[in-house]
Image (cartoon, rainbow, N blue to C red):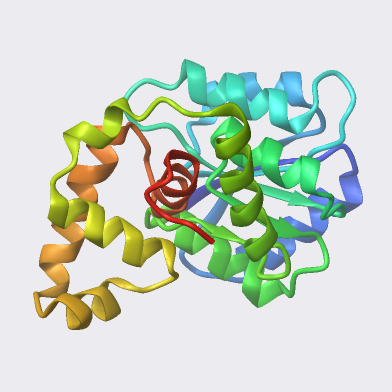
Length: 218
């Protein structure tokens, strides 16, 4: 069962999300609140697998709450799915830089929201397809402007770097395995080691790291 917490300052939105998510037999909404500050307390109390987080809220915005939740988490932090009406770049970049595992817009279809929650619970990240390309291009641009700490690059083997580059191109484990003529389970094992080495928890943050470090280019 996937345990979900809802964070949005509009009661009607939270009620709608609850109805949409609880139509799925494998998802349970275990708590909800209406601001970022309460979200931190809620997550510590109910320990959800996924948090559906709004961005603009009183008493602490969603991005600040995301940073604090992930900073306080010990072994198994929740996956943060940022759900907002805004697709402005500043929110997308802010969410991903804060450590969010996914970003979707509030007009996402109910089935897509359910699938997004499942994906994050399984360790897969996602960004709304309407913004994916420019997000990754912007991360690459920021790397060239600011520079980056490439210390983690030295920890990865050539095979691991090769797999990360293919992942950043949008390939699945099966597609990467076919490309490299290896087993999909081997790809999964490599990616697990990569995430441990670079200090991220899911595939999306691995892709973000790849673009920010220069391993991948748009």
